[in-house]
Length: 480
Ligand code: EPU
Image 1 (cartoon, rainbow, N blue to C red):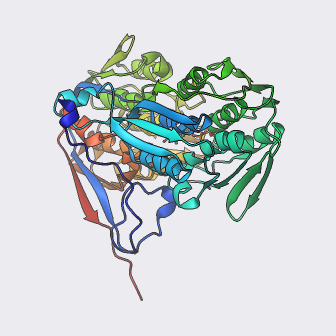
Image 2: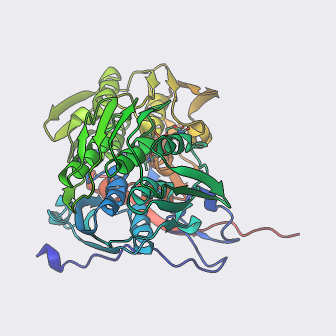
Image 3: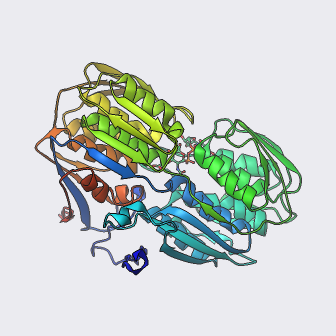
């Protein structure tokens, strides 16, 4: 029955001429695209309380890399539980331009949201990888999806040459690539930068190496693992990232025939093999989306059950909710958060996994803004993550930032206002803060939210929130 549902295509709009309403899924570097553009806004009214059950589908930050990992084996790989978001559509396009066949279908199993009459938030993606995939990822896609850089490792391993546009920084920070580059160099690649591209070549193939990362970078760990699985010999990555998404990609690669040990710890050992097989793999649940709902329940003094992932992935975040006065119950693949009273102030420090996730920082600031007392929030991953604090201040939040610290003094209520989403997580955090603000809050540029949350509005409605999404014209450019 569900197969007869019409699921609108999640295709990437062709780039229109300036001034014709370019609004879908553009990244932070796109500000100058059009003199007059329409922006999508989400309006919420304060005083709402989230209650009910929400299911999270697969993690964006895993699915994007799983799609890139498919490049490692010629033939047909199928990845299920892929979130239906703009970033995934862009990654599909990146793979198509590399010569792959890419098809998005009804997910198997079908997203439970469909069973209650909603639109599916997950898809299965079938990727047909040619014997000789292309070797170039252009800036027009990479600037919209900086995670496109994750094709660097697999293409270098398969083709011995790759040219990927340098993604540059974005609204949360400067975001270097030095660890990707130095790790691949140790594996025998020759890497240079030219005309905005990272160009890597290893005509005689990559070889195993001992690599110590300066910092447990998620992206560098993924690129290096994907390069190492087809390299000649053994690669050891020390100070590797330990995120559940790293474990997910390693699990998929192991099923493809890769020899990997230590995933989920700081030392990953990979013994290269000559060839991998295509695979079918289900994406791990999205801990950041789940964490967003946990904080939303706490901020609105609600009662929310989240299904679709192992709550152990959110241990530190859920501990913070408990420290703030929330009641948290966990099961193997679900958790429930209830908050009855005004939250208490708690300090938060973001760190690589298993520490508190930087992607939940806007939610932690939102909670602190409403808590009884002052919270010290420290951001250790991205240098620009506090940029969105100015928007929270427009909602009346009392925030003082100094370098990578913020002191947030809680208030009983915030005050609704028009604000602007500056990135995916800031957008979600502002919408939730709006639920705790007097009057109406209108969050603009919510295409950022679409990049990471499949149908945020439908989920809010399922949790009892009245919410409106509309398209509003951006201010026209003034001339003189
Ligand atoms: N860094 C370097 N050099 C490198 C690599 C990283 O200086 O070679 C720095 C970055 O500039 C940053 C820090 O190290 O300051 C962490 O970067 P990391 O490589 O760990 O992050 P990422 O792979 O670029 C992923 C997620 C982010 C998430 C971070 C941290 C994807 C597509 N993105 O980014 O998710 O915040 O890990 O957990 O997986 C989001 O989903 O909204 C998002 C930003």
